Image 1 (cartoon, one colour):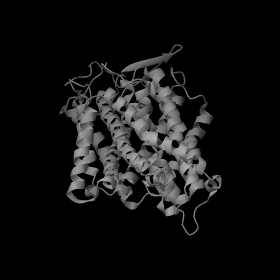
Image 2 (cartoon, helix red, strand yellow):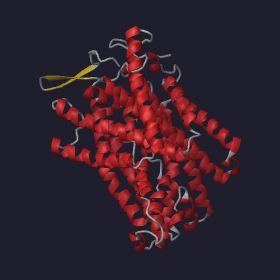
Image 3 (tube, rainbow, N blue to C red):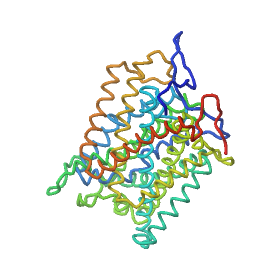
Image 4 (cartoon, rainbow, N blue to C red):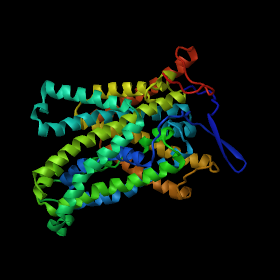
Length: 470
């Protein structure tokens, strides 16, 4: 976006002071997200079930895994959810975190925030069909390698993208069904495990002879309890967002934390196995030990359904982020095109799907690490934007406001910042290279868009135009 002054789309005020706040335009939709579908969409943005928590036990032992999933939500998930609730209700449009950075620090930083968050999102999208096929190969070995595996990833990605195209309300209710079906076997397993639990197993520091892998441990926590702010790009599609959004966020925090902690405590207390067996997917094996093959099969099916839910949630936020950035004139106006039949941002869905497909065949570890690194860069900017907006606009009307004064907010943001530094410091050289190249590309994209505006090569929104349908 060009550096020249832009008239804000809306102005909010408290008392007699007027404070300009830039927000993305919103468009009336026939069906908007209500509370329950929104809760499950946020749940799938972050977790989708306890399917990825096993490496925490493998890398550090039962006690540290339990403490990690007990403590980490308070130093990371809760602060991120609080910040998202405040800023999303203050800026009720599809621009989300892009709007926050733009309003705080200007268009360059708004554009760079959009680059970091979008790329981390589509990298995550690329991982979910891979996970889905990895679980399917346990049931159908033909998908383990070669052409069948590549075709399964391609076909599953295209089919899931089409489901996303059919509408956010449909995706929201699908998320509710997927969430219930994928969580149910863990609830059943935890109840059956109660008589078999031996509490002394919970305080085990790990098996002798197994070296602790803190890199894997912290990346596992970060991966499983992250991305609370992604849903901010859907605020313009939510019924009464100023009331619904905070309720949905806090409900999702509770659902996610208990969804991880209860099965973890049940299995670590009831099952005694070699610590090295706690690889991704071990929960299904544990279910067989506790109850039988029928429950193992259900959990494996649940893992596939969870991957579908994760894909749909992430694709929704990525596509609506592009729509919001177009409405803010960071991208050409054709990125805001909506389907005539389903009112969904089909250009964003198409682009997000194409990029994720191109990344689906990368090394899975590099995919996750690159997503974490880019997301960390965006989170630094997001935390800074939150603090600066509180300082810069102290009187603005905030429908939800984190109940702290500035010193408390600084401490709340400082703790996750330390963790972000750690996550970035342990990244590999290839991750540094990938993330660096993507950042340079994002900076180049900003100046290219600015040049296109100057030359009028592409059409961008101005303040008076309405969102388009096409």
